[in-house]
Every structure is written in structure tokens, then in C-alpha cells.
Picture 1 (spheres, rainbow, N blue to C red):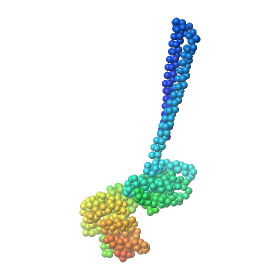
Picture 2: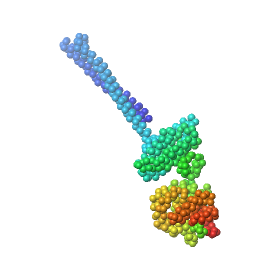
Picture 3: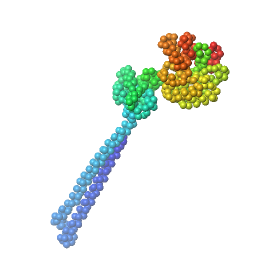
Picture 4: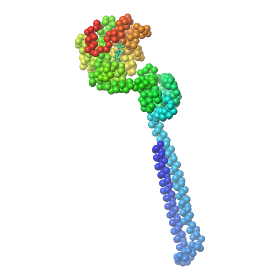
Length: 547
Ligand code: C2E
Ligand code: CA
Ligand code: CA
């Protein structure tokens, strides 16, 4: 806009200056014409005077001027020149001015086009042509302004294509761009206001809803969006499904400015990721949580150096013989302010932020050292260690483990590495490769939390597993829930058919232990035997218990 005004000001001042110069140039020629005409009159009159009287005198000149009609014509020439010069200078200047004006108009149109293009590029997403984050924020700001004055409600939905990275890795950029385009069209179709959809990040869309009358409608819209995006996308004759998460905030309830609202919609999106509905409304208690989580993360970095971490051990007992089989190493954090923090509170977060790549080596060192110590004392415990998804995709893991085993003097068969289906399924080929490399060195693998993940039997068969652990959510209630009992029984049979030993987690009573024995379960782990204990307490427990 400013460019345009400056251009117009500069060109119009140039225009009037140029007309003056042109006019001046043409007038100069006209003045010269007038001078030549006057000189011609003087010379013509003198010659006529000389011709009539024989010499040149004032009287003779005056008589010649009075009597000679030819000189009268000559006398009128300077006026003709003067008038004609003025006229033609005005006409030329006018034409030139008009030409410059036309060119300026053209220049102005071009400048406007250029400005519009620049504006468009800086406010729209190049792939989907939707408004980008900048324009979305601008629209939300205006909507907030209008809503404040009219006492209206607004809502913002953030829609995330959760598996976009996988889609991108599988089909490449061009095809995944086509999916984004189709997503944007479907979102525009389902949104009440077509121009309210924006693409505010690589895989995140924003939808602004003005004129919200009832917030229930917003949640309904979120469901329609999920339905609309559930249908597979057709790209290069292949069908692709995307998983969506939706975070919702309302104005003025959850914030009064665009930054707060969008940030809180992001917090709701985080929650949606872990909820089975894939959709969540912002809640103030979430933020306290996420602020605490953020500080915890930065503190976790220092927790290792400050010796705040410790491995606890929970017994695994062979059900038939009643003998101690081994122990699972479970991480604990003694936080100087918050006290003992459960791994459920910081491990998933550490996995998301790559902090896990520092935690796992520490856990492995401690667990391997403990296994070595027990074996040296003649206590042949098999120590289970949990690995996370990121660990399973780290090509250096086999070397890391080999190095730690050499440094601590343990044998691979003293250890059991616990992995979950989910962590394998994230990138099965790479995970399988790493598992096989470690298996070739003599390490055994256990599939943890069985029944809670995707349960892909095809992959289960491909993996060199030794053990299957039934998740505690099925085990703890086998006496009360017929359903759980059936699942546990069937899983035990399945595992045995695949040649795997079965550990049941979450055994909290003798009765459950007894029922598991009836089902043919091999190993039990749970509060009935012991809670996870520090090494010293575990040693005391071993001495005092019958196992
Ligand atoms: P998990 O691997 O499934 O570990 C079993 C969890 O069940 C432990 O929780 C354990 O204390 C709990 N548990 C055991 N017996 C019973 C019982 O009878 N009743 C009930 N209600 N719970 C029981 P914990 O120690 O809080 O660990 C939670 C999760 O954190 C673990 O689940 C594991 O996924 C993760 N985790 C723990 N330590 C590590 C670690 O060193 N590395 C990684 N990557 N993950 C870890
Ligand atoms: Ca485990
Ligand atoms: Ca488990």
C-alpha cells in the first residue's frame, strides 16, 4: 500500500515537472522564430527604404512601413510565430503529459499486482492455497475484536494429521502434498464458513468459528471433521488413511487474545493425542500439568548428574516351582521437591523429547552392573530392562549394549530386554533389524504390555521372542471379569503355541496367582510378591521371603 502511494506521489511530481520542461523547450523555439521574424522585418524594411529613397533614413523607413503592403504581412509574422509557438508547445506538452500519465497508470497497475502477489505469498500456504498462520492470527484477532463488541462466542479448532510424517516417508513429497490438498478441501467442505480454514503448520490446520451459539455444536463439528477425514485418500491410485487429532478452545472462556488461544488449543491437541477419542477440549488443569512437565523435562537432564535416579527391582517368580526367576528393573526419580516421581510421568515425555537417549544408557549400565553383582554372589537372577521405541530405532543400540556388557562383565543370557508392540510397530523393519542383531549376540526379548497395542500376530511371529508379558490391566481382575479371564487364558495358549514363556503382570493376590497356575501361566510378577524395591531392600526381601 505504502509503495503505491509513494509511487503515485513521485510520478505526479515528475509529471508536472516534465510538462514544464517540455513546454519551456517548445516555447524557446517559438521565441527564436519571433526573433528571426523581427530581424526579417528590420532587414526587409531597410532594403525597401534603400530601394525607394536611395539611402537608409528614419523618414524613409517610416514611409516604407506606411506604404508597402508586403512589409505589413512581414510585420504580422512575429505574432503568428508567437501564437503558433505557444499553441504547439501547449499541444505537445499536453500529449506528452497524457503519454506519461498512461504509462504511470500502467506502472501503478503493475505495482498493485505485484503488491497483491507479495501479499498473497506472505499470507497463504503454497501447497493448499489456504491462509497461513499469519493470516489466521490476523483473522482471529479481528474476530476477537468484533466478538468483544458484540458479546459473541468464538471457537478455534486445531486439526492435526497425526501420521503425516509416516505418509510423507512412504509416498514422498509430491503425493503427500496432494493429500494435504484433499484434506484442505474436505475441511472447507465440512466447515460452516469456508474461508475460516487455515494451514498453520506442516500438518496442522486451524479452523476459526465465529457466530458460535452453542459450544456443543463445536464438538459435533469436530466429530464431522473426524468422519470426513476418516475416508481414505486416493493418491496415484492408492488409498491412504490419515489419523487426526483435534484440540478445541473457546473465546472468551479459554483466553482473550490470539496467542493464548492458539497456545491453549495446542495444549488441548496434546491431550487429544493421548485420548482414544482423538479430540479434546482445553482445560485449565492441563496447563498447570504441561508447565510442570516442561520444568520436569529440563530438570531430568540434570537428574542423572545429581544422582536423583535409581533403579528399583520387582521380583518375577516361577509359578509352578515357587522359585525366584528374576526381576524387572523399574526406573525411579527422587525429585528434590516433588519426591518420588513415577516413570509413567516422565518416560513418555522423555521419549518424545529424545531425553530417552540419555536415560537408556544409564538404565542399562545400572541394570547390567546389578545383574553382574547378583551373579557374583551366586544369585542367578534374570534381569529385565525396558527399552523404549526410540531405543529400538537407534542403530547404535547393539554396540552400546555390547560395550556395557563387556564393561560390567555380564553374559547376555542373564538379561531380558522388554519391548512393547507399539514401539516395534512404529518402524517394524528397523526395529526388527536391531532386535535380530542383539538376538544374534545372545540377548533375549520379551514383549511387554501384551494386549494393549496393535497385537499384530504377523510381527509377533517374525520376532525372535522368548517371553510374552500379559498386561496388568487384564490380569488384576481375572477373578471378577469373565472377559479378562478369557483373554488371559487365550493369550497364555497363544504364547505357548508360539513357543514363548508367559509372565503375568499385576498379580496382587494369592487367588490370582492360583488361577494363573490353573491356566498354565509360567511366571508371576506383582504386588502380591513384592512392590518394586531399591537394591538393598530387594536383597532384604530375598533373604526374608520363601522364594
Ligand atoms: P511396565 O514395564 O509395564 O512396568 C510394570 C508396571 O506395573 C510398573 O510400574 C510396576 O510398578 C507396576 N506394577 C507391578 N506390579 C503391579 C501390581 O501388582 N499392581 C499394579 N497396579 N501395578 C503393578 P512403574 O514402575 O510405575 O513403571 C511404569 C512404566 O514405566 C513401566 O511399565 C515401563 O513402561 C516404564 N518404565 C519403567 N522403568 C523404565 C525404564 O527404565 N526404561 C523405560 N524405557 N521405561 C521404563
Ligand atoms: Ca516392563
Ligand atoms: Ca507391562
